[in-house]
Amino acid sequence: MLHAECYSQEERSLPFPERWPRASKFLLSACAAAVAELVTFPLDLTKTRLQIQGEAAVRRYGAAARRAVPYRGMLRTAAGIVQEEGLLKLWQGATPAVYRHIVYSGVRMVTYEHIRDSVLGRAEDKSFPLWKSVVGGMAAGAIGQFFASPTDLVKVQMQMEGKRRLEGKPLRFHGVHHAFVKILSEGGIRGLWAGWVPNVQRAALVNMGDLTTYDSVKHFLLLNTPLQDNSVTHSLASACSGLVAAILGTPADVVKTRIMNQPRDKQGRGLLYKSSADCLIQAIQGEGFMSLYKGFLPTWMRMDLNLSAGHEEIVNPENVWNGIPEVTKSPYEADSLHSLSAEGSELKGRTSILLSKLLPYEEFIVSWMLSICLLLQKAKSMIF
Image (tube, rainbow, N blue to C red; front, side):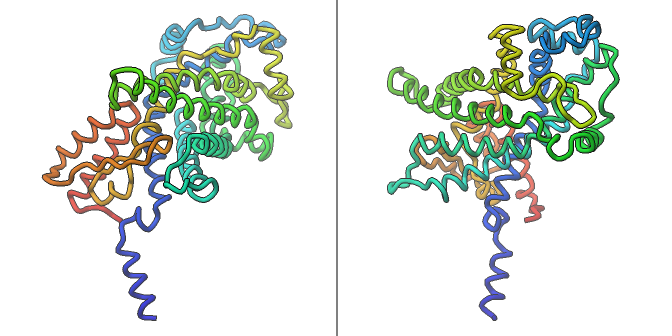
């Protein structure tokens, strides 16, 4: 009994990440993803508007659809939104987007670690082969996207509300809560997962293209060019992996967006498309094959920013809470460890090291969060 009480007290004295390692990683990744989502959201809104413009299936609904002047290109789309709807409308739908990113990024990270450690397992030398990383990444991405699909549905529909107002159509929702309630009341639980099939397909394809391309390009650059293993090599490999991921995932993303945005009857059934395959066929027949790549440029730009954090360096939350930032290689490469020296570790020095290490955009967001954690620890106001 005494041993059990001592063990319980000792367990409570441990830092939060040691007691709940996966929960701490979930919180860190979800918060970083949410901040990055807010900063890059105008690209996502622009992408959605581009994917909807010129939709062949809408022409059957007559004059209202024909009067709408389609946007042309990413810059003109963004400028049109600002001029016609207002600057803040570039963030319309940002709230469900943050919900979506918290669920998706958190579930994906925790699921990937579980698959890596408990399902696929490491090799005898503790390495993790590329093919296992690809399988685990695709599975984790698909599972995370499935759970996040209702928030994606609300996000897409809210992103199109400004355009509906310009076309003289009534607004569908008065807020995020009203959107969830209305969709649930009209289509039931199944209605919340409208468009989940192309959504999951997109996530799996994006993860596959990202993981395989990044590793291959980086090794090619290191073996065949004078480049060293630094931020330049990482940025080039990330740009290439984002390009391949966008090429693979954009068609499914277009189908997903159109299915989620289509009008529905009182039972929640789509009026334009019967299925993902039907949407794909109508898009190709009515608009041509390249209609599947509408919104490709903002998609690629956004992926290049968001995917870069998952490649080169992953911060160990346990050491963050202990006040010692520790950076490890990505699971797609060797599990070598690069510890940052804690000697003479003034807060300013630690932050500058992190900022110089985490150069890509979303990694800068992570470093900013780490600095906040270090400030809290420095002031001895950590709650864990």
